[in-house]
Image (cartoon, rainbow, N blue to C red; front, side, top):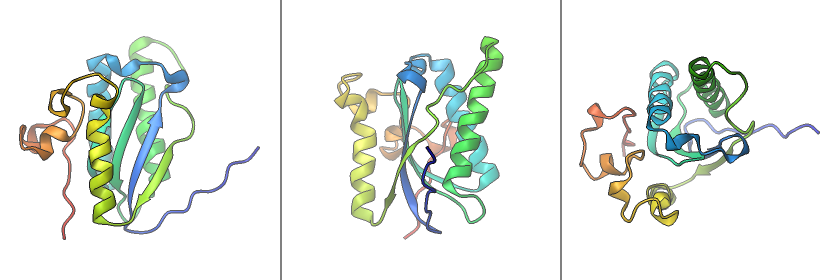
Length: 163
């Protein structure tokens, strides 16, 4: 069965969710969280995309990002997921993808929708009862939005859209 091609609009912002293979809870390990966040930041500099928000849950990742002009969302996700898998496999001396092959994306069409998606992303650890307040969760952009930590010191620096 073939899959439908994705349609991407230049300059669009996307809410993306990608899930680990067999929903393994690999991101309960803080070391693997750091590796993924550093990988996203690394490719952000190479592919010139913006990260407007994120939350790394035990078995999945939420990203809100805006691809740059040269590389579309598919290329970004392919490189981030593949690079992360290769790094972790080298460390664990194993092979294979750590992710489900597909990902979910939704284009964000306005500022209100962006606010709603950011709220969803930041409240996900609370909804899943991992913490009692969003600010307690270490693997999310919430603290950067609340100015609790300096974005420049974060493993994955968030970007703000210019009005």
